[in-house]
Length: 382
Ligand code: XIL
Image: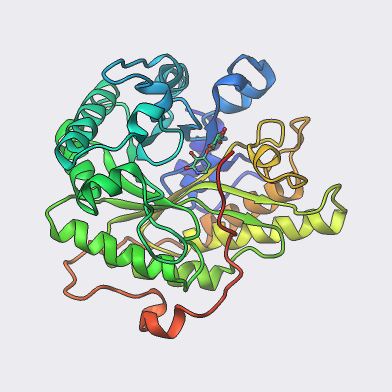
């Protein structure tokens, strides 16, 4: 047994002064602290040494490897090379694999983007999920079954799947995933559903209630959590949102955390602010019984997707480009340590069926739809 784990098991009062993210997250009562990993970084040995350290990261998400464009680039032509290259890491280390993602409007091969009838689209989705989730059956702690189905204004995103099937594509995707890999936790995953209250969160709650009422199993909601230093949601706002989602599903997770600076280069004060912003997210998860874990969308600025997506912005991760830990890392560790010592976490209550749709902040959607809460700007992926 690892020294740190041994100490945690043998004493709940004495903790070592130093430790790593996943060890402390587990000691604090979470299931994991994880990271996304992308294929180009697999041959960087210094990077992979950190990835494979199961005390640092207890969970891995393929950043791109399992997406539709990589797994079924031509209809019925399935390939798993990029997904397997990442999935093989947790197979060797014992880390959890969060699988990402089965049905998403983006990184979709052009053949899926043509116009299909309802029946044709249903068959396309069935085949994609049966093959991809079938290939990874038994390996995924969780699947992001449907990703980013809603727009910021609360309308359904006009994806090829929605255009062909309406909301039924979401129900069908969850039902097919449940039949294919019954052991995986099935998640709905999206961005801008972190900060209470906005139209998107309330619409997402309504959508989930509809899908669950239609007989689909939705185990969890993944809140991506891409945000900006100094404008990131507060712990209070984050907890309010999770309280609403907790009424519908058994698990919640922050699935793609990065907190980017909008002005570069950064000052020491900027980096301290970033450290504080990370604490709000980690604190919100720790204080929400159903929040199971936190995944950062890569841990080093060397491989972050942010500079490629938001020109002039970046340094969003816990480690810098040279793999040095930043103040944000140290603050997250300290918070996890104090949570472990304080024994903060409570056992979550199971989800009882609710008759009404819960609303963010426990109040009517109408009261909040018009409030502009500086949420993440709508974005188009490059
Ligand atoms: C990003 C990857 O990190 C990039 O490498 C890729 O070019 C675009 O997609 N929300 C998601 C993730 O659910 O899949 C996205 O990942 C980031 C936004």
